Image (cartoon, rainbow, N blue to C red; front, side):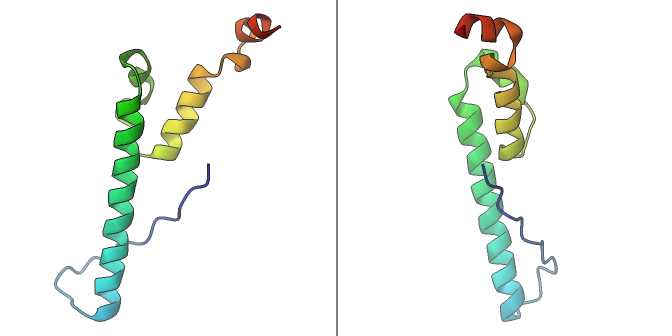
Length: 83
């Protein structure tokens, strides 16, 4: 999974120059997509799996944690089952 670069928060909410308005819009759009991804991942998991990712706010980190916890081929018991 490829991580999108997080744009810098431009701050200064009362400065209405064009570059800062565009920068704030880009930051807001990024944060909205990020939170939607977190909600989709969390909502797609069963209660038994949600405990692994509860409280996480980074979708890439959530995927990595889910992969590490649920990939049965990573454990010796899982490898024996596949064998």
